[in-house]
Length: 347
Image (cartoon, rainbow, N blue to C red):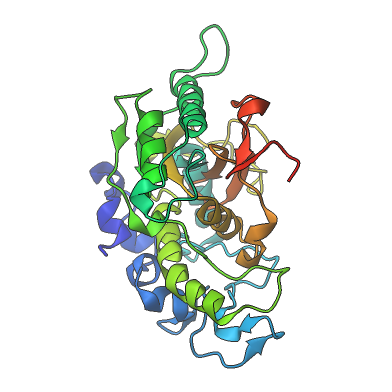
């Protein structure tokens, strides 16, 4: 896979002020490897890397092979500031580092990732191409598209301005592609990316609490984890464009608190925002949420995402991540709320 620096190039003007070699460390191998080694070998270039360690032996408390245990780079609950390999390298001058970070926070781009679970589908079918949306699932997708259209356009006469949604992504499974097509029909001007098989449903990791994993469960985890982890690394990262002094208007507010809460609502986290939508699956969404918030991935099954629910995360240019919505189905009437084939909440 091409380097993330190639796929998300610096603006020419920005590069004249801070080059990638002087502001961000060169971590292309670390951040873009989507092969088996990236997800199974937690040591890259002598640096401890988050991931599963294929060299581990034995079982984890008799639940599953220790080689399938996710190991964070920073001890939980500490935050790994370099989780995406794009944390700025130090200049050696604390005041200069603080100024650059402040400038990045104020002028950099905040990425908004909206994860949508597909609508209800015909689960009794065996072949994926036959596992299409039910009539209710199509209604759910249509209502989701209407909600997102309102997000894109904003609400006239209020302070709710539109959102700059740039692309709709989707897995390669029939139910997700059908959902994405119905949703995207509400905003034809937005790009639709080609289906990505790495977003397909699967078992991303083991779950705790849970019983001892069977041989087939261990095999399914081996089959799915590397692929789903590769999708996470591909779509979750901070925007690393570097603002120029001209763009930022120079240094200001030298007394600004460098530890400002990214969810405080203050207008100090930048004015540039980009949104993208990813239509995929419940297990994938739950795993992405845990990984993005640096919660142990083995907690993914403790979360619930209903059909056509919205799970919405923001990634600040400084690398902080927060969740604004988790399994939100406020756009669906209760009579249309389902988790797979289960209607309502009594299941």
